[in-house]
Length: 184
Figure 1 (tube, rainbow, N blue to C red):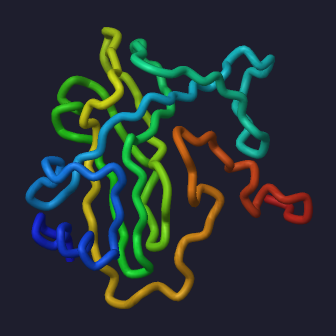
Figure 2: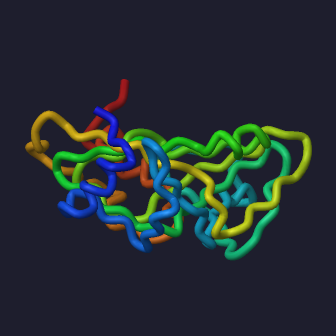
């Protein structure tokens, strides 16, 4: 069941949800708005390769502060807020409609599992034909919360737990890329 504004406040009071820094004005009827942080990671396309290999550590350049996202450009961003979810609370990150209507696609690559703690890394894509200025502190996305029927048996402890700022892809650490596993 999706948490309403009242439920979000109760989850915070109970300690099931932590949001730091917390701004009550960011609570919406059934979501919580998050703001864009100041750290960005851009894939380094000058690393001498013609293909992005998912089984190798990617190379990024870091940028801070206000940036301009060019048409068709992709960059990783982060949230100002750090969140912590209890073993029975999950969240779904969605871009704010106001951003999407401007051609800015904001995503988090999936569901945020119970037990996760840290800043959220955002995938930002400019789908317009004009540059988009990204200003840290802007409300850019929203979290929608749901309680699970029971606390999960194994809360999230994965490779992105406790991340700070924009975090690079760690797909190269996935089990399917281990030396002992043959993919095909």
